Length: 251
Ligand code: ZN
Image (tube, rainbow, N blue to C red; front, side, top):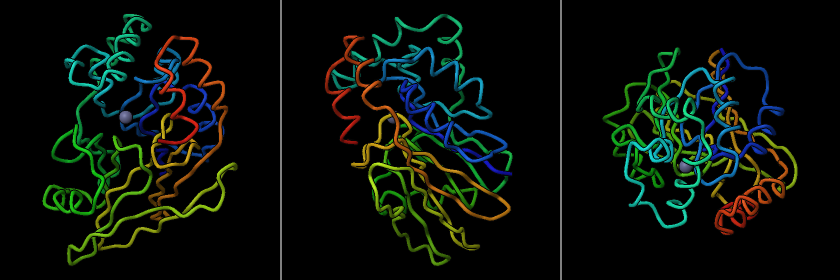
């Protein structure tokens, strides 16, 4: 079985379509949340995500846009994007956002679970090996896919419980690239496919990953997309300019 892993699409239809065009053959799609928020095409992205999606975990922006949490604790730019997004969605899409399940979710592969933030807290950011180490006792599967930080890579622990950062190595910034990670038995992994629609690891290219259970491998991908079109949509929608600017710098 091969699973396409998507996270943090953030209403960026241009990035999502580039990812789907570049994605290798796969059997299922695991979506780690934040389908909407920030970007200017929430309705189109929800429709596309529902068409292709097999398994979903909800993100904090999905909950805010669905009205499940008070978005006032968001920063003012994110708050404005939430308010704008609510006005763009039809009732069926709002209802769909509302019913998205909370992680962790076990996938159809019993070695893998999926979360938005962390295994303990769906809103927690896993940025450091110290934070990853705290997850150790909560991991029920060899691999946990997570999102939320918008940083591709993650963490691995050896059998002794020592944690190490994982970071794909790339050489370009203007073409599609991939990076293979072979999974070792006895090791535990927390893996972030990166953000499809708003990367924050100083690489503007759309990020995603592919999990292959036969090969026991996770492949990270970066693909260029029409970022100027995505920026234009944001500016035309009257959303804060910072949301357009950050797409090209990847932060
Ligand atoms: Zn996000």
